[in-house]
Length: 268
Image 1: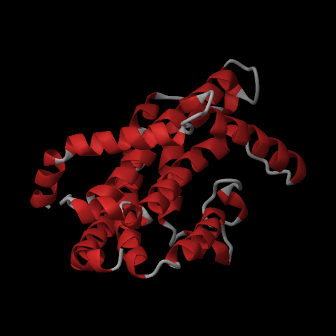
Image 2: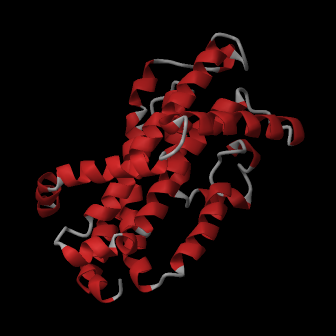
């Protein structure tokens, strides 16, 4: 682990340049540019709120905020792991020309997704602000307290988890390119196994809850909602669970990636 940290510090400027490059490429020729990181989740939350509250009749106060607090965390993980998965293959010309620690590429994709999520958080702040002012939703049902300053903790748990999973996917994708197609199908199912667009109360006491409890994203999303909108400080058990899941995937990711990386050059 110390060797990885030393290498990270050595190549931090390269990491910064790669993240800056991805930001420029993503919003190239876009009139609003980086504003889309805010507008996209904001507009999606409004559309989803209208559809699900009027057609599915979910009894969730301030549904737009409920949706945002779930989708921001899940979409970050999805973007981070999906882009990390293709990072080695996508940077094949650079890897063949110069020596760069190969884990830098999936790490950069995860960090880029993290930066993008931080900008998207502005959408949540805006939605919470207009709700608290009574412009939309119910201000009485929005419990904003000092716990909101803990928002970064579930983000870090998700970051570490995403990096670990991203390293595994990046290694596997070098040898089996079909994994990308399979993963896109899986993430769709994964989203529905995470209480983002439905309240967890509708599955409590059913067989589905047993499956959801096996879902790491359920705990990260729940933690985020607890501190941001519910004014709850998660206990030691919840923190140990989230930390354990994150570190387990990180260690597995590092081990798998380290074992396979020397043969990447033969397959890219």
